[in-house]
Image (cartoon, rainbow, N blue to C red; front, side):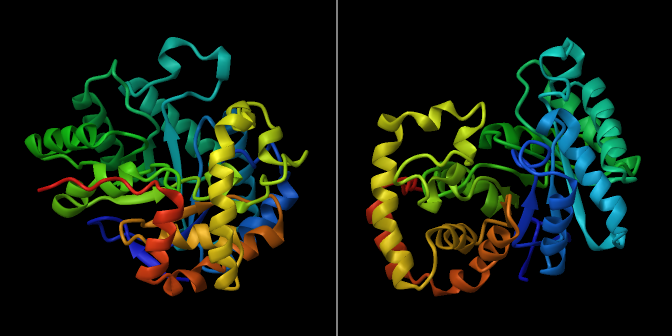
Length: 329
């Protein structure tokens, strides 16, 4: 397994990691999650991603039970949580969501209990909060770090401007700023990673734990001939992906992209993950899985990404048409 430094910190994360969004509690049980996390860990994965909102806290509870059962050396892996949406769904009260000091601290305590760990290696602000001053967020995260409850804090789906504002506040008060961002990044969604965050990568340093490298399964090719009954698109909340008019153009591009993957003797899924981790600004790409063979196959992306030459990358850009126009500095 290859490892990359988390931005300008000393923390090393495996270039592929394992997450629980959608799958834990909703699609897989304790027995299967135990096997999948075991496969990941045995193959060198050292980062396990989670959030308070995933299955309304049940995802963290499931991961916590697995970690307790595995009894791995706590210093050998990193685990995360994210706060913003709350863990109570429609029952959330006003102070049980957002990035207020109250919610961030209480959500951290709840995540520690559910995951059955003494600290979180990474703690994310799952979305920006327009109702909470950024000063309050930065001071709260610094406070949690000083208490030893979290080691690094970061953001998810924040704009470059919001991230820079957090760094300005941190510098002004000699506090610890955000070390990482968790954006969506795949062959369909490239703007933040390849354009918006460029100056932060160059001037400040920023680790990235990218999610949905397979674009909710569109980049596996499995939807080219319809929607399998047991797929993610069969779950509530993914109705937008069932709009054939919306996805048909994307599926046409996916079919063309699959030919390039076949020329490399690999699957489209492995190719798409390899494409993501070829970007040096990607610290780690989060994998999800519902089957052991699926996870084992996707780990082969580590062998494929060194094969992606500039010619192949240019061919991909021509097929996808999603490369963002670069700013002129």
